[in-house]
Image 1 (cartoon, rainbow, N blue to C red):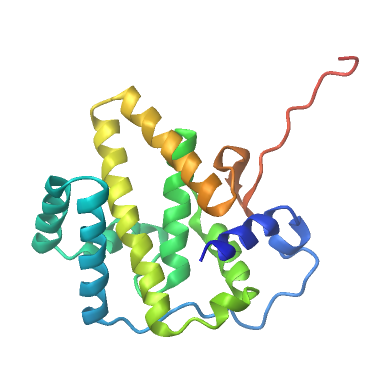
Image 2 (cartoon, rainbow, N blue to C red):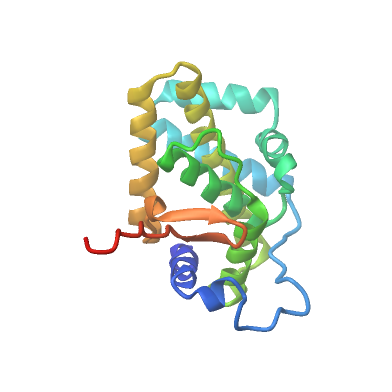
Length: 212
């Protein structure tokens, strides 16, 4: 799974490939969707909650379980990202939301409106060229997508809570966690990227005055 993100990072360093400037556009977008199974979703959620119990606390696990019992996790996620054109049942949509959330958190750009479309296209292009991803079956695709959807929900709730309380210390911890997570798991420096009309790209270096 991490190879996909590492490949995406490599694409960012090759603007012609990442932005489609030097390659002809594909006749059809690479399909990253999968048929959803409620049985598999229940197992993924159960395993996720178990991991929260051991990595955080039993109380955190129980609170999440209660929230998901009141309303399905996938429904919560869908409402949060619907305005960005993202949907359940598609790996690239789940990963796009996760990338954008972590970029916003890492860079403290809470009120910045990110255009998800170009970022989704970049991730989709990376997946299309990754042989490991292309060999995933529908079960593996659902496990990947819904794993990141659940992580998104937890991290999104933590960010919203800290922002609502104007807890600068908590916001700083969340930012550091996002930066560290992407550097260690994906080999990507979120602080060095900026979203724009062409998706994520390395931030422009400030121009030094002549003579400096």
